[in-house]
Image (cartoon, rainbow, N blue to C red; front, side, top):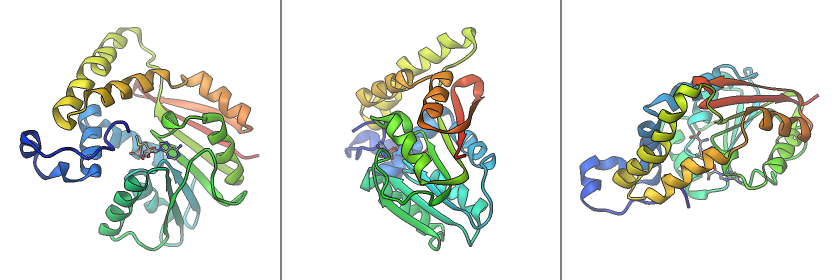
Length: 243
Ligand code: SAM
């Protein structure tokens, strides 16, 4: 298990922060806000707003988790569009489905428990495939990229939103301090789980930086692979197309 997916044990700290920690998703969403000072919402909105997608499209959101990306995509594909939320973790998927249902999003949504490395979908079945803060967790990233390409229709776009390499040298010490000092403390205080947040910081550092991920997408067979840095490279959006 790693950050945010654990049930938080009941105790004093839970009382402190109230009802939010009554479920895994409450924990997960709050931790995202705490760790990024809410900026992950801006990144996600930008990620979806700039996606190549139109009304009526069929979209796969991989590692969809609690459904942030899918909820935003719903506005772009409209009532005639279809959204498939895929995640390897059944608990995250259930929370995502409940949240979506509570918001009145029912028609056009499908939930599939699956591993991004071996997708249970036919070739050329989606107009857009997205994966946000998920590729980092996938063991065989090359396999996942190949699968994303396989299930895309010709002309379709794949989008990856992920932590990347910070560009500005002056910013690096602050970023390191946040990652290795602040994150584990936040994890300890709010989720009683410093180790998982330490793991999170390390998994971010191990993730392939911009040029390397771009090369991986090219190797997987994507056409016009490219990327755009957000917030000075804290995260990057990678795109590729099926030719
Ligand atoms: N996309 C959501 C977001 O941006 O808030 C969730 C991101 S969360 C950090 C990572 C998600 O990746 C988790 O829900 C986890 O279950 C899922 N995941 C990890 N490995 C996976 C795999 N091999 N295939 C599919 N999903 C995976």
